[in-house]
Length: 532
Image (cartoon, rainbow, N blue to C red; front, side):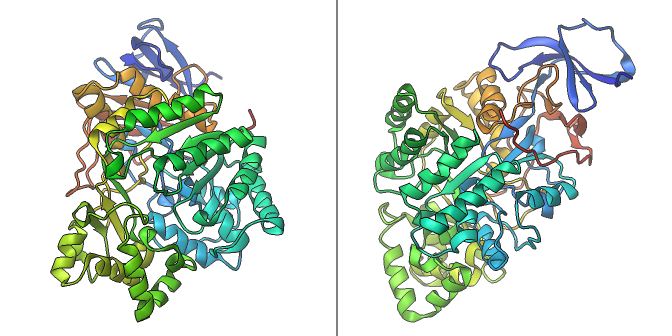
């Protein structure tokens, strides 16, 4: 029996491939896009059609860089992303993933995940398969495509210590990674500026990357913080050169004021690697500020054994003074701090008055040096304390977005309409901002290019073969929006604001947004990588 088709009639189709927009009709039957036709090619059936005249129809956006690993455990209906047309979240980035789990280091992993603003969470599973089943049981509103995090692998094999991983430890990590990939993870991510990933040497990374290459999966890297950022670029590129793995450089940016304005030099560097046959791309989000856990910027020896060690070290006067002096040496030890550019986004119940204030202003209020305020917040709240850093320029961001190697990600999280503190607005606005600011307002990208960078380009990169394109037989993840009217409304001072202009969204053939409002439908699922 033929499934009933729902027709989206008369819209402007931007199919994700980079082909020019065209007017047409799109049919959905069950979970798939059953037909894409010229307008009126199939007779109308008014009961089963939606008028899309004046609207743009695209594949649902695939956000290649997110931290929504446990979002749908806490908030299965979190709407910050679907209201931008995002239908799939790629998780497990920057070395953070909720699997694999060593039975005696479960709490260590829980503490580690708080570094990506994950609330303390019960983790009863042990591997990727258990994680996927658990998330599916919550019936998430969106699809989730997980990577295995290097930090989680290292914790499972060796804890958070600064140790050389070779011999039996390396074989353990390789085995755990193979298990993740065999169970359906889409690849491996590293977070080389975070503990414990930053303790990894090149031999360790290359050995794991070879496992990834053998599975035809993706290697994504949040690069190491180095005095010369080109050293970070080269470390990522060299992994691809040495192993042949697909390399995804995470959230490309220039965070050092001495490098501002050199986007063209950076892009030429990546293009040279591609021209030499290395399979490297990068992702970027459309904001000139970053956000992370405050503890990321503490000396590595303070972080080495988790949140409890942070508190113990900083409670000791000698440890506090040593950490304060080393922190004062600069951002990652090489970039001069400008504390007016560092804003508290999340603290805790005794320091909520600091949220939204710069560290400079907060330190003045508390009558202490900025470094001392940072350490006191870390001591009180551990990895929960978060900051936003305004250490980028708009021109560099725009140049990175426009280049053909760019894929669009948010580095954000699927969130509900209310969230504690003042989170980075990227979680509520990245894809809407892409379309409004960089396409409609400034014209730095065409609509066709922007949609490609947010749909088929990330699908191909991550290894998703049945989404990211409007074509017969693809999964029916579809967005319908008013291109001239789409807006990101989230701001730095009022970030928990949903985007506007997206009228309808389908996920796996079920309508998750209708007439600009969430329907309550939760048809998402954890996706598994298949062999290609």
